[in-house]
Amino acid sequence: MAVRPILIYPDPRLKQAAAPVAEDDGSVADLIQDLVDTMVAAGHSVGIAAPQIGDLRRVMVVDVSSSKLGQQQFNHGLLEMANPRIIERSGSRVFREGCMSVPEYTGNVTRAEHIVFEFTDRHGRLRVVESSGFEAVAIQHELDHLDGLLFLDRVSSLKTDVFRRKRG
Amino acid sequence: MQHFALTIVGRDRPGIVAQVTEILFNLGCNIADSSCSILGGQFAMILIISHPQFTGRDSFGEAFRPLEDADLTVALRVLKPGGEVPPHFEGEICMISVYGADRPGIVYRVAQVLGAKRINITDLNTKLVGSEQRPVYVMILEAILPAGVSEQEVDVWMTPLREQLQVDINVRTIPQVEL
Image 1 (cartoon, rainbow over the protein chains, first blue to last red):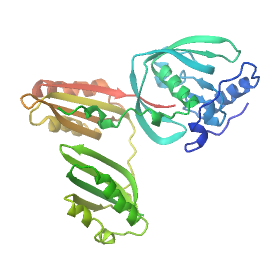
Image 2 (image 1 turned 90 degrees about the vertical axis):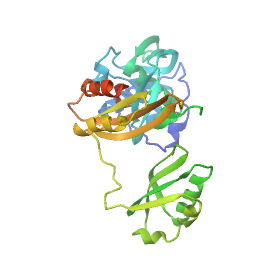
Image 3 (image 1 turned 180 degrees about the vertical axis):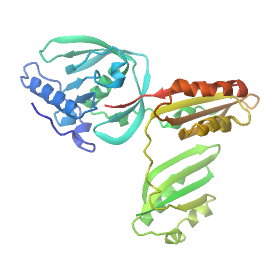
Image 4 (image 1 turned 120 degrees about the vertical axis):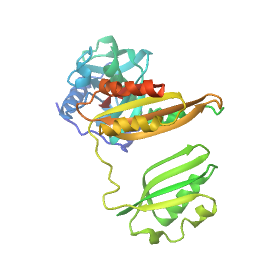
C-alpha cells in the first residue's frame, strides 16, 4: 500500500489514546499494510503502532525476526495486531529503549520479561499468543503507543535511582 | 554560540535549583545538558549553558554573586569551540556494579582496568551505605564496550579484583533497541 511518514514528538497525536477497532471496520487490512510497509521502509524498525503514522486506531505490527537481537530467540515473525491486550505478565527485563518518534534519546525501561496477549489478526480471528524477551518488550513498547504513552513515560529512573533509598 | 560549563556546589537546602535557574533565565541563558544530585549533604549542579551574545566570563558580570552570598561555590568554564558536542559512542552499554566492605582503592582499581583497556566510562556513581560499624561501598558505572569486547571478557578482567578487593562485581550489558 503505502509508506507513511512517521510522526515525531511533539506531535500531539502521539500522546492520545487510540480507539478500539470496530468489528465492521473494513479498512483495517489497509492500515495494517501501511504499518508493515512503513516499518520495513524504516529499515531497522522492529515494530510500529498506528498513532505513529497518525491513525488513532488500536492497531500495531511487530516483527523482530529480522533484527539481530530477535534472531537470538524464538519469535513469531510478523505479528499484525488489532485491539491487542496483555492478559498476563511476569518477570522483568531492562532494555535501553529508543523510539522512532522520539529521535536522539534513549532511556532504560523495565518491562515484563514474559507476556501473554490477545489480539485480532488481519483476518478478524482472535488469537492468544505468548512471548518472551525482546519480542515481548517490543510488543509492550508498541502497545504503549496505543495508550498515548512514550517510553519517556516509562523511564523508571535516573541512572542514580539505584542509590535512592530511605535514609537510615 | 559560545557554550559554558557551570558547576555549583553547596550545602543542600530547598530552592537552590530555583535560585540558579532564575539567574540563568534572567540572563537569557539556555540550559542544554545538565545533571544535579545530592552527594553527601551537598547539592551539586553541573550545567552546559549557552548565550547568544555572551563571549566569555566577563559577560556574566556579577550575576552569580547572590549564589556565592548564599554559600554556594560557583565555577564557570568557558568551552572551546565544539566542547559542547557530545561524542558519539559506538558499542554496547555495559553496567558494572561493584559492592562490598568499604576499603581504599575500589574506584581506582576498577577504573584502572577499564582505562588500560581503553574502555570509556560514561557514567559513574558511588555511595557509602550500610552502618557506621559496617560501611558498605557501592559503585555502579556505565561503560561502552567497543566492538570485539564482550561482557564475558570484562567479567574475566574483574576476576582478580574480586579476590584482591574482596568485593562483589557484577557485569551485564543492557541491550539497546530502537522500537
